[in-house]
Amino acid sequence: MDSGSGTGDASATVDDDIDTPHETGRRVTPVSTFFAETPPDVESWLQRRRDLGLDGRDEIWEGVLHVAPLEHRRNTRAAQRLARLLQGAADAAGLEVTGPFNLGQATDFRVPDMGLVRRDDADELYNDSAAIVIETLSPHDETFAKFGFYAAHAVQELWVLDVLARTIRIWQLGAQRDGEYAETGHSDLLGLDAVSVQAQLDWPVG
Amino acid sequence: MSTYFAETPPDVESWLQRRRDLGLDGRDEIWEGVLHVTPFEHARNVAAATALTALTYARARAAGLVPCGPFNLGEPGDYRIPDAGFFRGSTALYLETAAIVVEVLSPRDEAFAKFGFYAAHGVQELWVLDVLARTIRIWQLGAERDGEYAETGRSDLLDLDAATVQQQLDWPEG
Image (cartoon, rainbow over all chains, first blue to last red):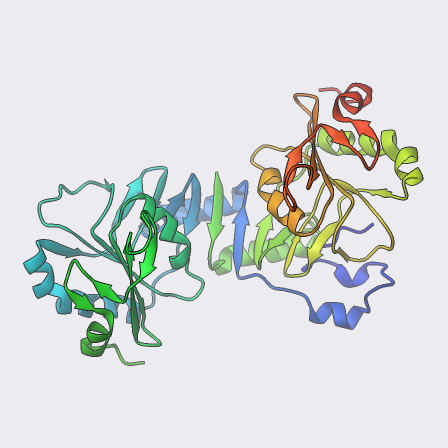
């Protein structure tokens, strides 16, 4: 039995059940890669990246390094404009808008694109929680896979921006069941509806 | 340490391509579209898997099962590669299921993270070999709850107990 993977010498396999052209058409080229044991060549690439200070958005999920691709400028721009838009409501609620920060602890943390934290919270390199986490969707990012982590860290609201679709969605912790997010489209903390913020936001063009 | 690239960067992609060109990717898996790169297996693990299939060969054939080494279980965009297994019927590049899947533990491997996948594919028994500890454990699908594995320490398919196989197996030295 041949053990050729989908990307290897699959067509060279002796196989009565599958005709080769069909099989080739079904091949999958993965976009994402997981190394259970990071090989030395990849490790040295990661080290060069660290040396250049390009790893600031990388996360560690239960001991596994998650390498974040560089953010498209339209995402950071949308985040900046949202921060300005939320300024007044945040001030009134005693919250402060921050850029990316480490949420969790050194061996298990996520780096949200933005957050709202309490004005009197002490800043740490790794922060236990935040009042609101705001994620801006990028292709292949892991935004929705982080919900469980944020719930476990008692983040009260999750906002998700889709800059291409120009939409904002809001989930609130415990709105339906304790310790779980439910999409409410409303922020109790800021007294705002997702649809009104979405309409007011000066979305970046292109 | 383990590393996950949501978007594999060009430098890593070209390393993966060199690896493919050299035919070194035969044990790599794809989990729901994500490439899982497998480190090389220690020879003692391969030896143990071979010893197990040798030990159970006649019994398996009598039960209508074909013992085999690593094979693709699943479909091209979502498959795992067990270290060994026993299947029924004809071969294919991607087998939908197997009667028995055998995983030999390696440091940081994902043997236990594959249980859900194997259950969803109707694999009846999972055997897990720990070559350093010289132990064999057996889980059976639906032994307690439908669609879930329960550790029974017994193979109904081969009519064997884990403890017996563990004792009889010609474990590799060192």
